[in-house]
Amino acid sequence: MDPAAIEKLAMPVTYARHLTRLFDPDALFEGTGIRIADLDDPNLRITVRQAIHYIQNALSLAKHPDWYLEWVGNLSDHFHGAVSLALTSAPSLGDVIDAFTRYFPSRIPYMHMESRQEDGKLLVELVPLIELGEATPLLVETPLLILMHHLETVYNVNIGEATLELRYPPTPYAENYPQHFRCELLFDAPRNALNIPLGWRSLSNLGFNESSWAHAVSQCEATLGSSRERDTFGEVRELLCRAFEKSDRDRPLPTLSGIAGSLHITRRTLIRRLRRLGITYQQIMDDFLLARAQEMLANDSLKVKEVAAALGFDNPANFGKAFKRWSGMSPGTYRKGRVLVSRD
Image (cartoon, rainbow, N blue to C red; front, side, top):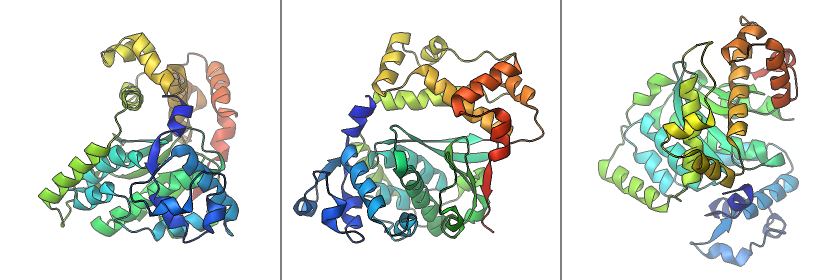
């Protein structure tokens, strides 16, 4: 599955219907091939390419660039099909995170989601599978806001204890973020991720209904598009995370053959599956090492040479060259340029 194939994947037209309340439908769907009359069809599905196109149209039509932040807050909790039912009927907050990362990508197939425990936190990460261009903030922040709103309303958590990481520079309207996210927010971060206290995972849903939960999961599973390629992509990233859980300077970097062996598949099968997503193992590794490097560089007590050694580089100069190739800047420049937006 390459990027062109991802753009052809089908997704619900629900969000497009809702946007016709904000924008002139003719202008919103110009060039998309979506006919306004077709929106009355409850079973209508559109492609990712069509969705990205109407979102770009919306960005050009909007009077204010941050319009979507308020728009997301107006979406109903029951607006996301069977996924909504799964989230509201889940036994615990941990089950909500698991259901969200597993099932929500079926509504936005251009996004991979995963969750894991890291440094005493529960991390929910979003990884775009195609280049999203100017629509990146909208398409990354919207699902994160949906999840945060659900955690606040159903579990009554203090979202101020969370931290949001965004893997792009501050937007021109970054000063407006605190009123929508209400937690600390870091731009130019190693990833797009919501970090919440690990203890939240065990919080119970007082409205839990076993039959509703079972029905919701069965509905979500029935509509879940099977994709070995996407599953493999997530498994590779998980194995890399495990490999770097322990601080070991003598740890060899995981190889393609080693990862394939852990997945009980051949090298050729792993290469083929990743190629269908338009990516290579080396690209995944580089992206992972960049993210780890950025995390460690955020700790001012660590010297650059210590970061280099922890990531398997014998020579700090080689690490500097690699980091500049990955990010376009030196480790020192990155360390100076991180931007934190406080909720206060």
